[in-house]
Length: 302
Image (cartoon, rainbow, N blue to C red; front, top):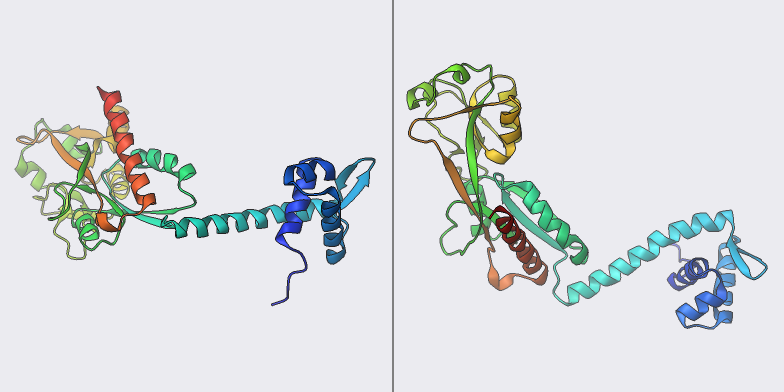
């Protein structure tokens, strides 16, 4: 590896001379002598063998080559600054990355709202969001494979959960499907004779699929977006979260079905921290923002 001819400080001085409009102004901002700045830039130009600045009157202007190199240097100095900030954060215990699992029925827009608030405060922490279903969510909590988890239903034994919201489900099919033209409410036997679309459990030892499971004819897909593609082809019926289908029902692209004895279906969602003892400051901040976001949402709905 060849040794660098220039230094981080030389490029920082060049940027200051350009940004502040000259050597005198940059010297004042950097609390350095003007002669030291002149020397640093002159030495940089000599080392590179390229003219970066030219002085006209009392002001220094970038050459064409200087503009190209200065633009690239900003990326480098920014990366160095971010690297130093990361080192400082790690020293203070701030996590460089967080892994969060989301039960797929949880509205993604709620999570994005919290993440948008987290981003400017997160000190560069990288976020990975995993989608999970039923026992897959519980397994991630039990194995402490994630830092935070949004789960549906009852939390795994030994873990406390903070309630977030309830998600309502709608039983739907395509308007052209035979079920859509039948008298409502439908009975169990009628549904059992039709093709059902269900969502696959993501657990290593799957305990079931997501949905009413009495139909003998069944297609299992990975998520609700795939289920909606199937429904759009006029195939099958499916229980789908209301926030994913309300517009389609209003616009007539999907038909809402009612089932005798089960007119309403709802699943509670909660936030779980798999290991409180190991929770770091970045995880704590994201937890607070997720809970705060739901407090705001509850206030708006009242």
